[in-house]
Image (cartoon, rainbow, N blue to C red; front, side, top):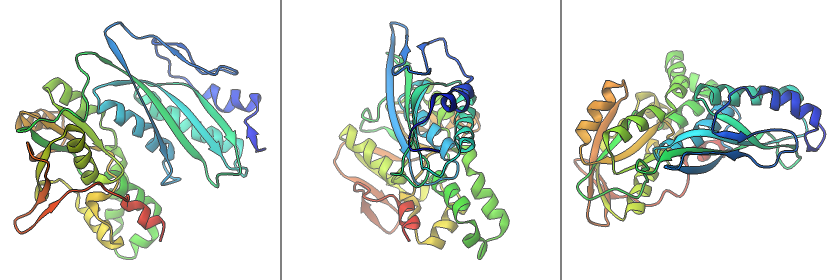
Length: 329
């Protein structure tokens, strides 16, 4: 396609015509020449906004982009209503490439009843593969907003599902040939299918009903980054038992193969939740078929400690996402 803004005829048939999900809150949505969207929420509802680009992989980029913003909103107790999509394509892209990308975005948005309300589509030689950046708009009752800064001393720390799910599925898909040189096909197949766990919408909804003090979805930087961020935002300390942090064997094997730290591997699909009754929350989540574990406690100190039987280490801000080490090799 020609460098520049996508022509109106292509925009209509390959972008706007792919949008089928509609929400009553959207008064003005995506259309030719419409630069803004308009949404209407009830008086007691707060608007929550987030934005997330996905740059680490070309495979499943649409799915990862949609759930990046939906998970951010869910971690605040919000329901995602709409997304705006910015898509920058390299010059060697075809209109069919654009159609496929939009169909994939709409597929996952439709599954979660989320409307695409606008964005920007352009062809540029500044990128060598499609770049997606999505902004999400959500709503939450004013008395149900949850932040990552509400953790209190004495709270239990709960981790949902398993850490490293996003990183594991990306690596299994991008590096399948290398992995097959050591591992059986079934292990790679199972790891690829970790993408079915990437949404945290179900556990966030259950957590809000159960009553929690703070939530944060684990994404880039992995579980260590998520733990640090929730503690730093809340001004509290942590005592975390490393052996209790749930992790799939496939993640361990793949990380060992590539010399990556599974605790600092991008971990969408898992949440860190603090609550006064961790065992009660774990019980409620398991009734919903969601794995969860109490991994430690919130403390009134500034020390954020991860320990095993033999060692103690202090958490620090995660400087580098592990998966980038792999793709920079």
